[in-house]
Length: 198
Length: 227
Image (cartoon, rainbow over the protein chains, first blue to last red):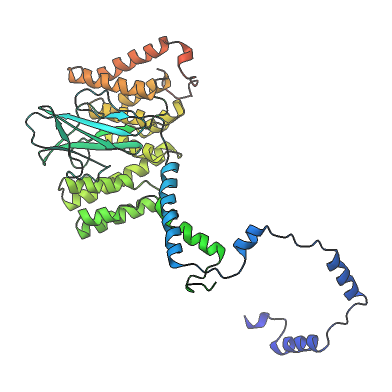
């Protein structure tokens, strides 16, 4: 590496010293030309007052309560914007509603799960929408044998099952089935608003 | 007027950013389920599952179904190794579905496609479902998986759904077709026969409708089965 330099350190230092000790003589009239050029440049655009206010480097004094109120307003606005901008699906689709079947109700994406379970003491629905928690969505008895619950589901494909008496998992006999999974069970499927053609 | 506090000294843009921060946090999509996993699984199982989930996330695969699989296993009180195997298998199926779709699939399509592949549906059927007619294929995949789950062999089931979609059956028609096939199978008809006969009947019915009531059909692509 050391033999590739064109300049050794001493030569370079000498050259730099010489440059600064004997600056190049200025060209005659250079100052005047520079002044003329600068004078001909367009004046910088003035910023709008709001932009100046926003970008200006200055102090703003805020009361702690004001900061909290602004943050609270932004929080509420965030929730509202999130709800308004959430993807909307044109329709809901499910099975035909015979017996135990989810009935999709389009506008609110409420899905009604129904199971006819004679002799059951309690029934709940579990699925990817409630983290498969058997205690999360208990169904209500309607009549002697029918159990019903309405769940607000997000658009898309959901898998679910019924849990009878806290331990027996049951597929929905009227809904589409998913293939058997590693746990040896065929879950049921409901599609909420996925179809653009129905 | 003398300011009452001196600590909150902010420039305009900084104040706006600070104010907007809560909104950004609120509208952010939900987390990757780490909290649920840690709560419902043992520490070692949760860590193993989280590792698979993180890896899938890095590959751009949807992780919601992986977390759901793990939670389902926990709800069923499955053994830890079974839960981990199920999550790993689901992650692999999602990757295969993405390959089979040749890109451009939505999250719901990938999950439904993974489910179909796990049922034994030929991978090329996924891409063909999309090429025979534009539009989402979640419902066709759900119908296809359902037929297979009820005993229709994967290849004939795929041919039936592809033919139905190519013929112009809408998603609502496909769901009705599924119901009829399921009913026929419950009544004792052989699954493959139920799928074939019912599909042909639906395709004929669609063909007899007025063209105005149906969307335009695409011409057949080379290599596709004729209905």
